[in-house]
Structures are given as C-alpha cells and as structure tokens.
Image 1 (tube, rainbow, N blue to C red):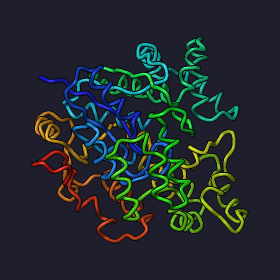
Image 2 (tube, helix red, strand yellow; image 1 turned 180 degrees about the horizontal axis):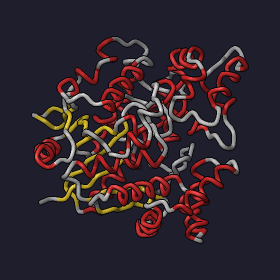
Image 3 (spheres, helix red, strand yellow; image 1 turned 135 degrees about the vertical axis):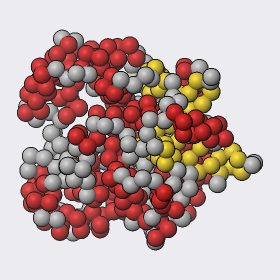
Image 4 (cartoon, helix red, strand yellow; image 1 turned 60 degrees about the vertical axis):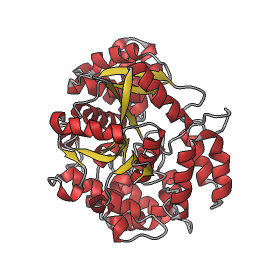
Length: 423
C-alpha cells in the first residue's frame, strides 16, 4: 500500500518555502499522499490567521496536500507542548499516516528524538530545574531549553531548542513519545529564510513573517502588497488572497478585533479574567491597571507593548488575549482536558486522493471523522471550534449569520473533481 506522510502546518499564508517542504516531505517519506493538520482561525502565536481556514485549506490542496484536517482551537492557540500534542494525536488517529515530516534548523531528527526520549517522562529533577529557571524571570521557551541543557549536561540541547523550528520539532517528537504514536519522524532542514526573518533576502523564498509584514504594512494597497509578495508565494495563494481581500475577509490581524476584545477586557471582572487560560501570576490585575493608561489610540498593539516584559513575551501575551477573546477557561482547556488527544478529526478539504484516504479512515481512524459539524456528535472542543469561527468572522469588514455559523453550513473544500479547481 502507498505510504502517506503527515505535516503539521498553519500556512499563514502558504508560500514557496511551504511548497518546498511539501515536495521534500513526500520524497523523504517515499509517500504518494499528504495529510496536513492545520490550525484553524487562531494560531499558535496567539494571532488570528491572515485568511480563514477554508481559504487556507484551498491553498493547501492546490499546492499538493491531499487531505486537510483542522487542529482544534483548544490545541492550536497554545504553547508548543499542547499545540504539538494535539497535532500529532490527529495524525496518529487517522490510522492512515505512516510518517510525519517537519522543518528544522538542524536537519538532525536523531538528536532531537534522543532528547525527546529522555524528557518524555519529565523526571522530577527536570520539573525542578524548569521551575527554577521560570522563577529567575526567564520566559518559558528559554527556561525549558536551559532546564534541558542542565539535565542532559549538554549545551547543544539548549542551542538546539533555542531555534524556533527545532523547538517545535522537538515537541512533536515529545508528543510522539507520550502518545506512543507509531509514526516515523522525519525532518527537512529549513532553507534560505529563518522563521523570524522579516525581510526579503532571497529571490524566491521568504518567511511567512516577512510576507505577513508586507501585507499588513500595505495600508490597504492590495495591488502593491500582492505584487511585492508575488515572487515568494504560489499563484494559487495569491489568487485566493486577492479574492479574500476583495471580499473584506483578509488580511486579518488583531486590530480588526479591537472593539470586541476591549469589551471583554473592560467588562470582565478580575475574578473572571483570572479563570481564563494563560492568565497567571496576577496578570488580570495588571491588565485592569494598564487599560486606563493606554492613551487616545488604545490599540491592541499599544496594550501588548504596555504589558510586555522579559518574562511575558509578545507571543505569550497574544495567546492570553486570544484566550480572553475566545473565553477559554482554564478548566475547559487545561492539560487534564487535553491529555486524551484529539477527540475528532475535522475535515476541511480534500482532493480525489484525499477522498480515498477518507474512505480508509472511516474504517481505520481512532476518532470520529467529522465532515458535517451539524450532524456530528456534540463535543465541548468542537463547540469551541464553532465559537472561534464566529469570533473570527466578527473581524470581517461585513459579516452575518453565514459567516458566524459557517462551521455548520460550509462543506469541506474539494479540489480536482470533475475538472473543477475547487467546490
């Protein structure tokens, strides 16, 4: 039987580097089909996606993915540990994926896997080292890397985990160990553009960070923005982005949610804020004290700048704001609620080859396959996904019930059927 490779993605937006990763992943795995687990509307760094999940799924299918599954929002807008855990559990529960492939700065899967195997049980000594680093004021990613280096006695561990793609790849491998997932891990070395590179240094490969910056700095000039990123993204991405921009559904960013977000922050009492995931160590009080000091602009950007410290990075604070806006309570999205792994496999889109995979999954998957949310067995995490869609749609230039309740009405995107690009 042909092999299937899994990838874990956000495609925010899908660019030439992603297209390279897709082709290289298929080659490395000897695979004939690709399953992507993709974040929905709210991303791992606590940001709204540039385009909605159906538009990004369409771009993925046109770029060579065969089946796109949504990572539940309870996992997607989380730190690396839970983001990775949810995504790997989705791939494992398809019952059809043989391997998964991720990008990394090192290109060395064996070194990352060895570290993951050592830390999978999280020995008490590691927990103590991690807490000590956190108490010193280090942000969580740096504290984790330092604790890993102290436990292993290897500075190479700290150096490896200091790189964003290495760190995420390590957490995929950690999740694989903890889940006992029978998936072959593979990695492709990241080329030409680093994860955080904000400029266009290469002729054809740029980071998603650089592409988003150019789009969001466009000041409404769609033509100029799309022309600037044209060398760095597939034609299908550009076409879909142009369509969504014309419809007032892109590019999405935090300032589009300023009014509903600030409504939450201003009206929720401190005790309710304290019950929201990501709000720790008295951050609820700090938020309330900061709001009156923001000045006449009072933008989301100004709030993030005012709250940011060495300990609380922008990413941490964005995830906190996402949790507040989406009203993700600690008890509903805690480790205890998420440790069981993905409770369903939500289908966002597929090709003809993907349809064959879906047929296999209906027999072999370890979780219900959801193609119609309205007909699916109710689940608290699925309800959070639907609510996240409504919250996301409020940022469109105009929105209505078709947008707010799209999860219940919109069928999976289909590409390559009957001579039609997408349906």
